[in-house]
Length: 308
Length: 319
Image (cartoon, rainbow over all chains, first blue to last red; front, side, top):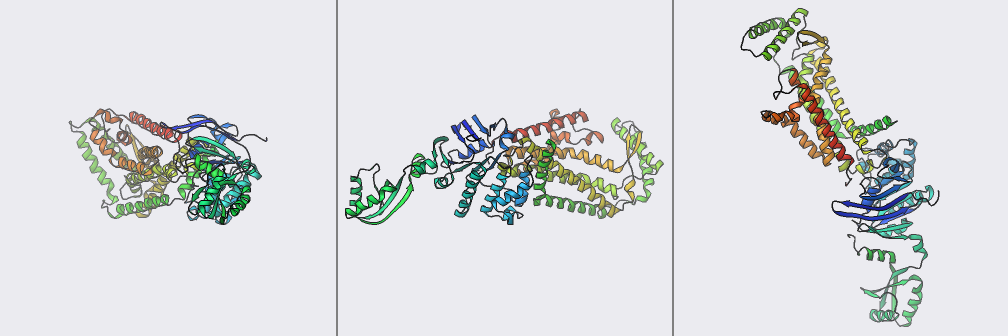
């Protein structure tokens, strides 16, 4: 069924002691999409994911996975979910293969061949019979993905999956998730506090702050629309350049950052702008893009720092 | 189908136990200490040779007869002596030698109480770690996001610990039997054990008697493991569970002894753990009976397990 939702989070609230951690959270996730869950540390990403996976109780509201209520019908709801929460903590004194056998035994009707399949998917054939102790973080992360895929899930939940991974590992994981979502129609929920990762991985991003969903951004829409970027110009004399840019009366005021001037402008307007600056007798040594504007918006929304 | 899933969960726990080194270190220490105790029995003991046991018993019987005839002797003691006398006479009549310390069965039985105390210690460590380690290792998060109810996972862990204890008891029995045979010869293996119920003497297979001896001591063992398991489940730390468990194991009896002058002390767990007090000798606090102790023990057992259940199934996983 197309257009069906796999995850429904309805007015969820989480209170621990007197503190409200999550307040009135509502969103849906559809099959085949990668949903990014973005927010600064402490915003409530992990708490939401733990409620989704039944590790934490839900104070108020409901969560449905594949139509089953997570709290009332846990075994059915979780049967088609795979997850990694925070770090992939596995049994270090067991081998990779034994770890997979361990989790495989917890599912009622999955063929044993599936273990070999998931090992192949994540490409761990050579080291699978070594103890986890000897694995690098990247390999543990791969085994983490393998255990999450054991039950051929309809929903994959990954909490901060890129923590501690090197760029190559992040790239690999990203490709993995995209492939899983598009080829096997799996819905993926990924949380992160880094927007740059989310932009490349996700179809939609939900931004959470202080336990509230601030905005849901469709990444395809965003790429389609004309997006303003932060552009840095290395020019001399810097003061007359600034005076000239201010005289253009654009939406954002130019700012001097060190030896450069930063402006916010659509990429398409840059050549014209450069020509005009040259006409004014200003020397241009460099022009480069600093940030995507969503990132700037995100930083503005979340107060510009990591800890809310 | 449901049973097979439970078996799978227990197999998982067994796999984890079998691949952690501490499991095997404990087993190794157990075997080593059995051997040491065997050596002490063999070479640290100057018991009279077994050949003149009939003469010994005859002298013993005369002494018993004299004591029984004394009017100031309390009735309970008189009964117990009369039983001894009856058993001894049966021995002489049927030529059944009493169990000597430096014999196969003497060693197996004599070594049991101290070695089962050692097993209790290991069992507390095991019970204290099996839940807490999942929290400290962070693996609890991967364990609980499977289609198994939390109480089933908890039960599988409990069963795995019980299974490991049974294995240790079996090792204790087999190793001490073999070692006893090697050190003191297997010749006496067929000697029966004599029970005396109201003057009626029955010959019991010695293995059955040892099982009873082990069984009585295992009641305390089971209670301490369940306690350690509970603490581990509630506080998520093995150190606390092991610490409290070992502390109570060592001083529990002493504390009960001090408190035994108060009547409420009969409700203390440790006052009831030794059911042997009703079989040989007198109860710790007056008015206690076997039935009373069993009810108290069952009560504690249920309370410990209910607390474990609530502690494990009703809480948020913060780790």
